[in-house]
Structure formats: C-alpha cells, structure tokens
Length: 528
Image (cartoon, rainbow, N blue to C red; front, side, top):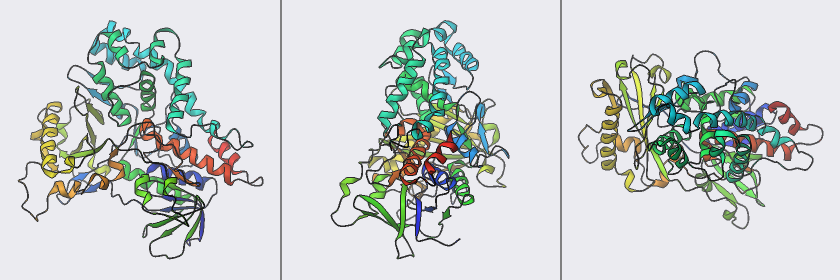
C-alpha cells in the first residue's frame, strides 16, 4: 500500500481513544492514516530484567456483559476485533477491584448479591441495608446501560439539522447523565443517592460507618483512576456500573494499542511505523494537513484527531498568516502523575482469592494501587512467577521528580505492600526501581533516573498524568481537529476516550457526508 497525498482521517499519537477513532473511520470506508506524534514506550523490559508497566490495565467498556452495556466491546465486536477467545481478555470477577481501608475490605463485585454479601460481612446486615448501596445500584444499572446503549443514536439522530445532541464537553454530558439517573432512581431507598448534591457523607450518616469515605475514595480510584476528596453519589453509582463492563488486556495497554493498530490496518488504514509527525498545518482556523519526518510534502487531511495532550500538540501546530494559537483550547492542568514500583515475586507471594487489582486507601493519604499480572502476558516464555505493579499518584511538582524523594517513596510503598501481602519481602526476585541499592555515584546509571528521569513536570508523558474535572470534550478549538485522549472526558476514566472517539467520528461523518454516500447514516446503522 502506497502512502497517499491526502487522507480523510489522520490519527496523531497512540492514545487508545484516538486509535479507536481510526478504526471507526476505516470501518466506514474513509481513508485513514495512523501517524506517531507523542513518543511513548509503554511497558518495557529494564536492563535488570524486570518488566515495568506504568499504565493501569483496567479498560472500562471492554468486557461484554448481559446486563450492562459495554459500548467499547460492542464497537470492537462489530469491527471483528473483540478478542473473545484465546484468553486475551480478563473480565468479570477476574478484574473486579478490591478496596482495602484500615477498617474494611470490599470487592466491587459485578453481581448485586455478592456485593451485598461483601457489605454485610464488613458492616453487618443492618448497616448494609441502611446504606441503600444495593438498591441504588439496582436502579442505576439499567439506566446506565440504556444511556450508553442509546448514546450513538443521540449523536446521529438529527443529520438534517446538522446538529449533534450528545454533550460537546464533559460538564454537559455529566449533567445529562445525572438527570437520567435521578429519574431512574428517584423512588424508594435509592432516592437519596440521586438527589441533587448528594455525596458519600450521606452513606456515612445512614450506615453509621465512619470508613465510608475512605471506602468510596478507594473505589473511585480503583474504577476511574483519579484521586478525589468528595464523591457524588450519582457519579459513584455510575462509576460502579461502568466498572462492571471492565476488562484487562493481557500484556497491558501496550498490547491493547497494538491490537487496535492491527484492527485499523486490517480495515485499510495506512500505519506509519518509521516516521512521525513534524507539523500540523492550520489555515483559516481549520486543519489542512500534516507533515511527517522524511517527507517534505504536506499530506492533506479531511480531519485529524489528537491522541496526546493539547500542550504536547501545540508545539507542532503551524498557523498560516496571523498566529492563532488562542484557537486551541486550554489543556486541563494535571493534578498529579503516576509512579510505579515493579516487582517479580514467587507465586506463593500472592494469596488465594486476591484479584487482579487492589487499592489501599487511608484518610488523608494517596491511594496505593496494586496490580497482579503474569510475566508471560508481556514476554512469551518468561519464567514462572507473578508480576506486581504498585502505583500511586504524586503531586505534579518539580520536587516529586527528585530521585532521592522517589527512593524514600518507593521504600514506603514497599513497606505498605508488605502489610497488604505478608511476607512478600521474602518472595521478591526482582524489584525496579530498587530503593535498596546504594545511591549511584555521579555519572553512573540510576534506575530512578532511568525510569523517571524527567527534567521538569512538563516532560512527564501524557499516559502518566492524572487529570481532574469533567474534561474538554472531543473538540480542540480548531475546526476539523479533534481530541480523543485522557483530556476529553477524564470524569469517565478509561471510558472517556471511547466517548470522545464516537463523538468525533460522528461529527466528522455528519460534515463530510454527501447525499450519495450518506456516511452519517452508515455510522448510525453500524452503531445502533
């Protein structure tokens, strides 16, 4: 396949949401180009032989269930790209997060009866009933499933007026979802969960369990990957419903990216693997083309999508005539970044009954996420053992990058991990970065500098950043240039980029479709 001079849809960067948009556009018959923009190595093997995966492997919407609507799984299934065989996905009970606090431990089970048993074991029957936790989820789950099942139709039902009825930003979309949940759960015991402004403090009052806030904060982090001081109850119910559609991809997000690129290639997309984007050309407030390394001629584009942060893309944008940098939306300011400590341990280090993900949450302290994986999922033929990735969110500051501080933090994380998994220190075969090694002399290689040697917070890669707030939606501010990354809808966790991909492709299809081809209706038929 030869490189063309023009493409309908160009994916810049490798965020899974942007890659999904490329798959959707290719499925509709558009010409698609996948072009690297933000360099990111993802999971890798260190020089010491340890596998380090710095990204959480918890993909919302990828696990198909009977009750909850898994929108991402549905899209991939219709493109022939959902790996339902061969043990590629882990779903259901395998990935249901466990949340630990100093007073409680709870598995966020996918079944109401099992979750009720968990609550009754920890709180007692009376407190579990008084919390109204299970009735709230019972009311929310069909409402959430109906909402996301109908989301593509809300994006595609009005082509003649040229308008999309979905939310163009995170705040609007969250507002509409809250309204739907309030209507569905506005009766009986669940009513208090969906009242305007209701927060987790209501559970604490009803159940008389003081650890409710830590439990909710830990569950929020486990489901959406974000720190929060206060959790709204309707958003909490929605997050749990999304969590029931989660799956993990064997080999982590690095393998998932390769899977999406493979789907796009099978559907006819041109995948560039030996060059990267150098310029994004904007003329008269609209994206016109891109320039790639090793090729001087501009490649024309119908539309392009950013699979990276707006701040990273900004340095590549070239405006014709008067500089119009103000067109680009302001990127959400990160409130932290993820630090990962990677271990290889003997199999006996992981106790029976422990799931793939666990979150430890104390009041006033950052959450500690513990993820368990198999080495063979990353490197075929790896020796026996288990991988443990311990992650936490650090402040987005210069001080948090100092290797000396990271050493102290790593030691604290390991000590905390030893409390969660007794005797783990006796089973460690590899540890990276290894805080036990003496500080390297000046000029020698330091594992902390090797893995996290960022000169400033601005250098921290996009996949490691933690973002607050509802997000900017799928529009960048420049016509024809979309955003399908973590910045789009961070309030929906890993599901947010799926929402952005659907909305971006819908907007493009609406604008590009003529009466003969009617690709907008083809998209509608494909998704509904």
